[in-house]
Length: 168
Image 1 (tube, rainbow, N blue to C red):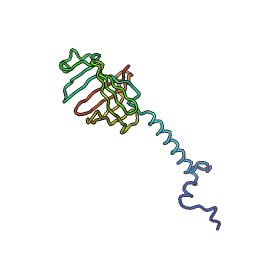
Image 2 (cartoon, one colour):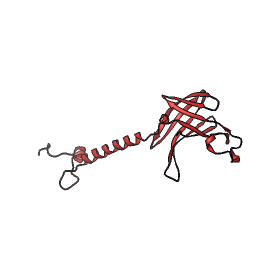
Image 3 (cartoon, rainbow, N blue to C red):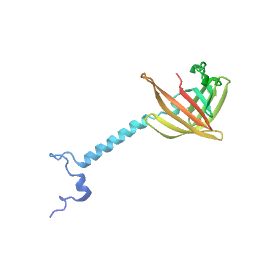
Image 4 (cartoon, helix red, strand yellow):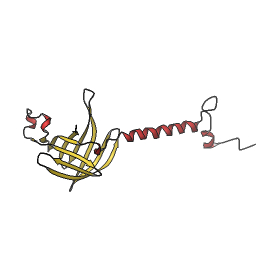
C-alpha cells in the first residue's frame, strides 16, 4: 500500500473536498474565513474615535449631582435646574498623550494626561489624570432623531462629570 496517496488525520481533513468537483477544500474555506476576519478587524480598528480627532467644547459640568457650569450656547437660562450654574467656555484638546482644558472665560489652562484603555466601533475609553486626580474620558456618538450624529465625550474625574461635544 502506498502511504503517500493515503492521508490521515488533520492533513486529510484540510484537503478533503467540500463539493462534488473537489475544488473547494476545508483549507480554502478556513483561509477565506481568516482573510475576512482580518479585513473585519481592520475595519473595526479604523472606526475608533480618537480623542485627538476633535476640538471639544463643554456643554455641562456637574459636581455631586448639581450642575455647576454650562456653556453660554446651551440655552439653560430659563431652566431652574441650571440656575446656580456658571456660564463658561471650556475647550478640550488632546495631542500626544497631553489633555488640555482651556477656560476661555478666564484664560486659565489645565494640562493632564490621557491613555486609551479600550476602543472599537466608534467608541473609546481613556484613562485620564490631572495631578493626583484620576478618571476616565469616554468617546461615543450621540444620535439624534434627525440624521445628525455628533461625537460626544464624557469626562468623569474626582466626582465631577463634564459633557463635551465636538466643536464646530
